[in-house]
Image 1: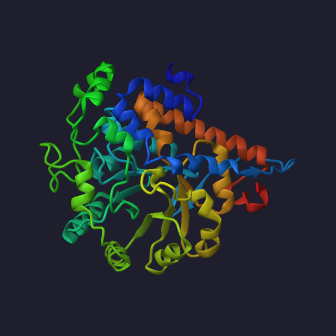
Image 2: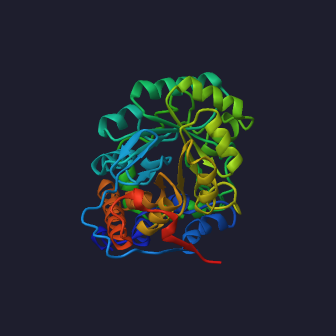
Image 3: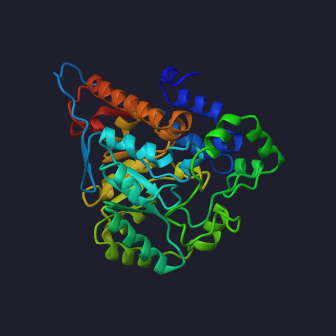
Length: 382
């Protein structure tokens, strides 16, 4: 199977599975416990039908949106995700460059494998810094100061990860950073020598945002220990309100799922929220962001920019979210599998396909701009 034969999410996933060792593929593909929420994220879109209008004279289609003060050429963005260097040696460099080419927002994670500064040099597209709340308040302030200096436009605090989810696929293989594979995991690496050649022929794995604070390289701290030992489970609204004031710019909370929390985010001065269950990787059995979208937009959509992510695999999924009032839609696995399969070329092919699908589907809906998508275009199944 070649990149040129990849025409949708499932094709990219299959190609990534052929290339990646099992433990790494399952780290991307897996979710928490029984993975109910992971499956529900995509299934939620299937309970909603599109109602197209015809004879609307749709000549040109404008896909642009403005979210948290950032003008995007298309209504999807590349959500910040961790450890991209493991999937392909180009890692975040590929994603930043692809986002720049398509004029959309991208993010670098606290667990990103290139620095905020390098990402800014690669792409002038709007840049998000996704970070976690640490017990060390000085470290939190230092991270924000660094992001400001690097030219990051939006701070995105993940609020659904005060402890790591129960990801049983990783337990079965022994996947951790640094690697502590069991025999089953080691065997799966042995049958994918191409990945090993790619990984070891390029620069050493690093976590530049944390290098000076966490020793990942010598085996003293795994990612799971980072979550359990360095992050602060006692984080509360007062802590976040202080960070919002300290940042003094666009500030987004990722992982909001209730109307009450959306209102609090608006009250403390956040300019955006992402309805997200972390791709089903945290609390299994939780609701999908799409299913919560309408009631949260109705409650706070006039005060704060509402986005959502989780399970997005098609342009029609994006149109349904935009019709309910989302300002933009986040992509995660949608670009990670193409990254793993083919680096920057894979990410660009995936974004090109998404842009083409959205434009085609908007023409079929009779809409010349995102603003013309409304709830009148939707019907939900009982």
